[in-house]
Length: 178
Image (tube, rainbow, N blue to C red; front, side):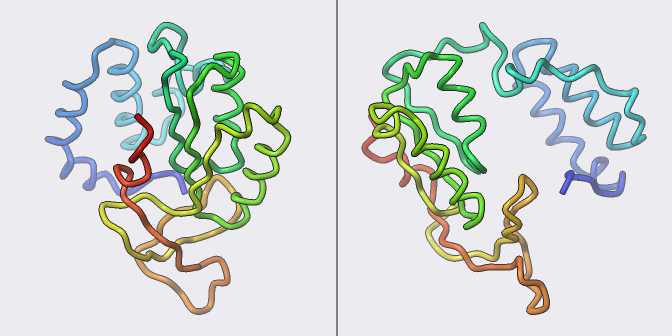
């Protein structure tokens, strides 16, 4: 799943895209947004700047300064790769980690990765086996055990990748984290 749609969808979302642009505080982020819009219209890979270095894929140094009181939240934690990168970058310096993952296959890989962490660090990771949504409930989920797993608007009884998962609001998952 690559987030592609026909160009008319981007045109219909123009006001929302402009609001996002105005919320971005730095030029690299604004340039990245514009590159993404250009690419979705043209599918020309030359419309995008080179990607950030892999170790900075989620946060460039200096954009935020993690503190020991922070709780790192990863919605769609997959196999824990970004959690591991964050903890390596901060020296494990976090009050806690909340890893949210609804895909059963990815959940197994996530739990295995966390089990390999030093015991003191693993004890600060809370795994939430749900999807994040506006309200508690259930939803159809395409569980492929890959980075392409996602909530789905409709299920197919012919596709074994479709499962029903629990959904919880992020505010509820964060309750009590300080």
